[in-house]
Amino acid sequence: MLEVRNLAAGYPSGGRVLDGLNLSVPAGAIVAVLGRNGMGKTTLMRTICGLLQTSGGTIKLDGEPVSELPPHTRAQLGIGYVPQGREVFESFTVSENLTVGRIAKKGLWPKIPPHLLELFPILAERAQQRAGSLSGGQQQQLAIARALAGEPRLLLLDEPAEGIQPSIVHEIAGKLREIVDTTGLTVLMAEQNFDMVDGTADSIAFIDHGLIAEEGVAADGIRSDKVRLAKYLSL
Ligand SMILES: Nc1ncnc2c1ncn2[C@@H]1O[C@H](COP(=O)(O)OP(=O)(O)OP(=O)(O)O)[C@@H](O)[C@H]1O
Ligand SMILES: [Mg+2]
Image (cartoon, rainbow, N blue to C red; front, side, top):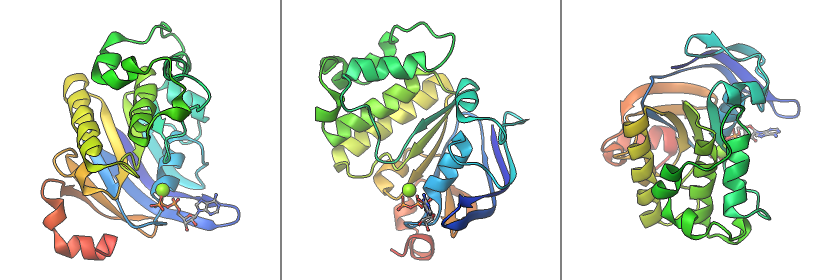
């Protein structure tokens, strides 16, 4: 569904971060990109959703090139994005955050779909609470639900487990798997936390200095793969 070929991208002050990156994400799969701090995970996510321009290579969604399109057009085509650190609208209520995620996509009825609130009951319970006063785990669920409210076909998640306690990580991972299995959503997530990946992702791609060094590695049992963990995560 997502085909990234020979991708190059970076920052005016930081030089090229990605330089020749290749990655394929099949439809209906959860693929996790694992790699150390500073290896280019966020840069990759931002480049796919269009917040960062490519300086070379191609990004195709269902065979159509999207690399030249602005971020809002990519969102209309079905790319949803949950940034690292969540970035919910803190002064808005939970309900208002979900509505913003919903109306950002043209042609959608503004009402929040009931199945979304059933999936994340804590958000239904806290609908009128200011998002900034939610716990970290609750804010992450809100950020994911806000992106899902726009009915994406491809969801990009940047370190969804960061700063979240293990039981909530398991809960979020289970929900993600359920959404993918029931709706056919495709997920690309950047992670360093095995609790989010092991038993949730279908496969792993390891990123090393801006390149995918290995992809299609089975995610199940990844925490016992000492060779790869030492090589790509210094564990
Ligand atoms: N706005 C920026 N300007 C200049 N350089 C940047 C900028 N953002 C990131 N970089 C650099 O790009 C490289 C990749 O950073 P990136 O944030 O993509 O890594 P990451 O894999 O997401 O790391 P982490 O696990 O810490 O989130 C780093 O060397 C970083 O310093
Ligand atoms: Mg990052």
